[in-house]
Length: 88
Image 1 (cartoon, rainbow, N blue to C red):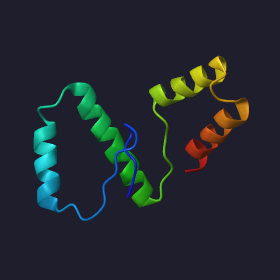
Image 2: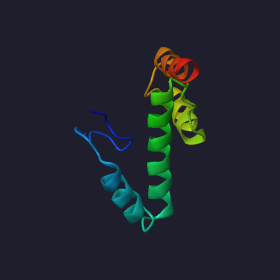
Image 3: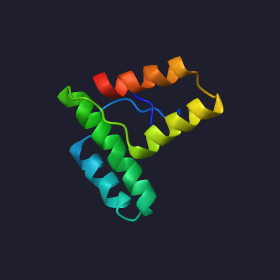
């Protein structure tokens, strides 16, 4: 099970190659922003499976900066998030 970039969406079970191809075919009709979000999620999964390090997007880094400036997140919380980006 995994959470999606959009929040508390979950899936479990096997997704066959056929089902994946169907989803990707439908995604071709989605707005560009939704396609990019799907691509980003796929890159994250791929990096996890490959044992690689996840690299935060410009938007994610900006959100962390804003959270730190606004007081939504403490400096320690922001630093912890950056550590996950650095160390995978």
